Image (tube, helix red, strand yellow):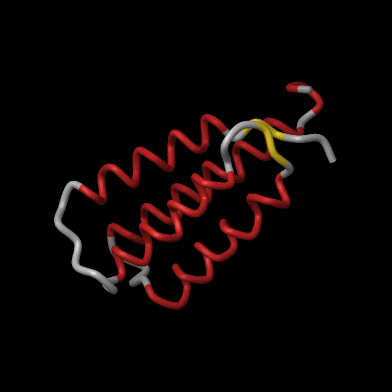
Length: 99
């Protein structure tokens, strides 16, 4: 498969990281772990890369969301938005319209 540019998605995730970090976060809290997952995503989305490299960290984020985050919380909304943006990026970049 062709390599996909995830730069815009990476910037989107970095925005969420900055918003979460505005508050002081204690170690080993749900927010702290969420930041670790988001930082992993930003690490693998630098430049053009194959989507399979990004798919693992995004799946890990979703597993973390399902196992640890209250569905009606602000953190849940963040996870859903990030996943939606990831799917949107894949759809746009894999579509023949954008090739």
